[in-house]
Length: 359
Image 1 (tube, rainbow, N blue to C red):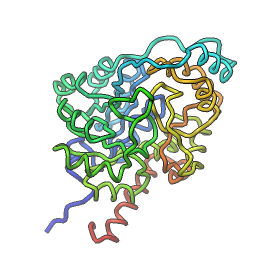
Image 2 (spheres, rainbow, N blue to C red; image 1 turned 180 degrees about the vertical axis):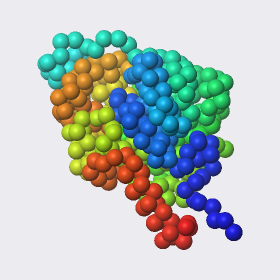
Image 3 (cartoon, helix red, strand yellow; image 1 turned 45 degrees about the vertical axis):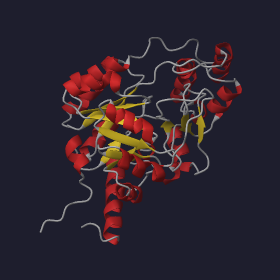
Image 4 (cartoon, helix red, strand yellow; image 1 turned 120 degrees about the horizontal axis):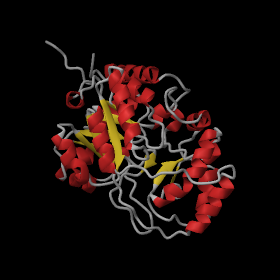
């Protein structure tokens, strides 16, 4: 009798992958074409963090990955509408000037709209579209017409149910441990969002929706992958683990900070972009928080872009947004993404074997 491989879940067939592993769509540059392609070649779903890119750059990136022979490639788009803030734009500009005195002006141009990015990714041959920070309804028709699976991130049960009602084919259950922006659809007037842990969130979303669920948040190795499957998820989405990969387009100092981080170190802050996000504290965060409330999303991100760009160019971890989850200490040292994936899967198979649940 043939034994089913527990690491080849129904989600794999839906996403066209060998393994139930999805690269988080980390906006701001980490998800280079090289990293996306490496994850795809290793059997997972590579994902571009498309927000902040031009439609042309995203099209070129997806096209390059497909030209390299990788069929499973996605683009993640953040859907949060502009929101007002209570902060003083002049104070934020003063803080940015202090952080980046070598920069005379903000970067030129404006980022593409979500619909433009989705259209560019589809035209270039993406095999899936994922969205975060909002209801997928605005892009659902375009994705459905293209015949692609629509993956939606949710950080609470209500948002997961709403996303499925709007056409999501897969839900990413984002636990409070996850790095980067909190994918709650709504943010309170005081800027706070609920932080439901992965262990509590995943089974509740699994029980609430009738589509496959991907677990995210604090999952850094094979033990976490097996735990996610035990909770009812059909796969995992990983971001922080792949920040240290050789192919990740972040400064070396960023990678070192992630690997050296401690479990209690990360914070939730809206000071960088205007929406709550988890990352490691540094001079950028402390200076912007001292300047007062943010001016809202995405205006705050636009105002702080110069400082972050200067920090990245100077390989200065004190001036970049160090998005990272609570388990960054498990990332290990930098190595190729394929080696990280191999270690992840080997450990998962070892754990399954110890539990008597797999070959």
